[in-house]
Image: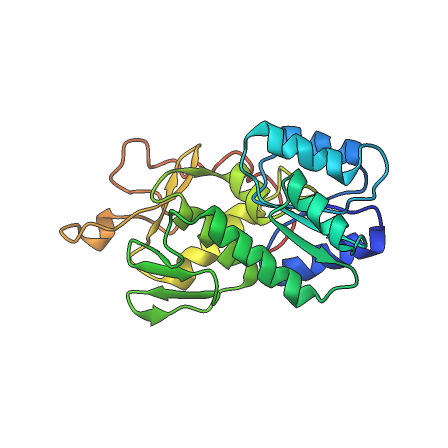
Length: 257
């Protein structure tokens, strides 16, 4: 998500708090930066302070609404009068939280907005025998509870939401990390490898060589040896002798925190 806040300490505190909840966030300290980030990145939710340098938070909100993206907007601001709130909702805000605030309340409101945004999808998602409950932050594999790190959970959420579609390493880096992540980091490959092992055999996260990763149900009539190796590449697939990884996996970088 995108946090638009001109107070650096507050913005960083919110970002760090969201990381503990497996929510990746970028920060924009002014309206120009916010509009630039919105033009090049896709965000699930925007958290806007109204009183920021450059184009105001209100102008940023108007831009988001005009784009037709449907991105939910939560206004996080000191403007706490009733008419302030009314004008914020008229601009297109989906929720309004005044300062000072409790981080846990912000997290609950963000999760509620995300559920509304994805109302066409069930709150609990399941694919290939993997059941993910985003609200309770729980994962089960064939009925067995699987303990995951925050980053592993964030990556799995993206893969499961793709419903079997291929997700590139670049997209995982964008969705589960933040804009400061090194695009050449090995973090995605390392995290996916660790996640695959946590979920157990037969592997349900497949590597599509040179492209990305996807969730895949193992075929019941297929022997284990012909399914996938530890890199998730099918051993009997054409060209699978090369364990190509998606392009972002080049050198060590941010870890699995």
